Length: 153
Image 1 (cartoon, rainbow, N blue to C red):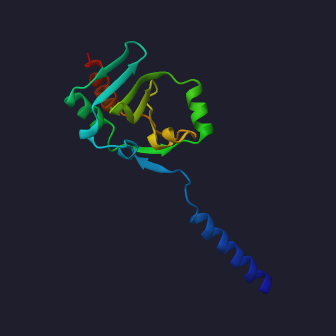
Image 2 (tube, rainbow, N blue to C red; image 1 turned 135 degrees about the vertical axis):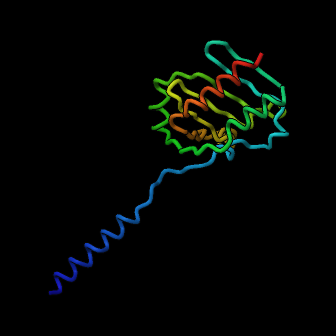
Image 3 (spheres, rainbow, N blue to C red; image 1 turned 60 degrees about the horizontal axis):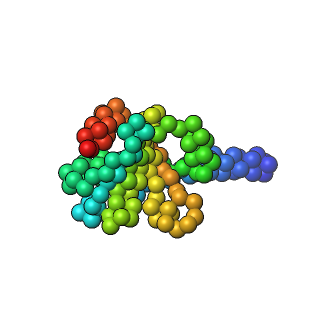
């Protein structure tokens, strides 16, 4: 009888613990990866493999890029995940938001439609820069960023 009770108790504990297991994936909202307010950003740079680098100080363009990079749920990438992803990645755009020549926000859009953003604080720390990803931007978002970046003179 005690063996059955012990076995049942162990089984219940295993079921409870497996049901309570947490997902270790850390998520963050994209706006938390931009280290300053919109009004402090004085320049944006867009690097495009086809058109080279473009810079703008146009307030409307900066505001549009800033808004584009807000409200997106990002998933933390491990170093291994980032290495695998970047090994064969084709970068469409690399976007840098700057304030007084310091980078305050950084994002990369891959041809696969994935958005990668970097934690600027870890970038400045001298340690590994932490990257975050949003898989598969929807077509509407991709079209919006293409129009935005292509309109920069």
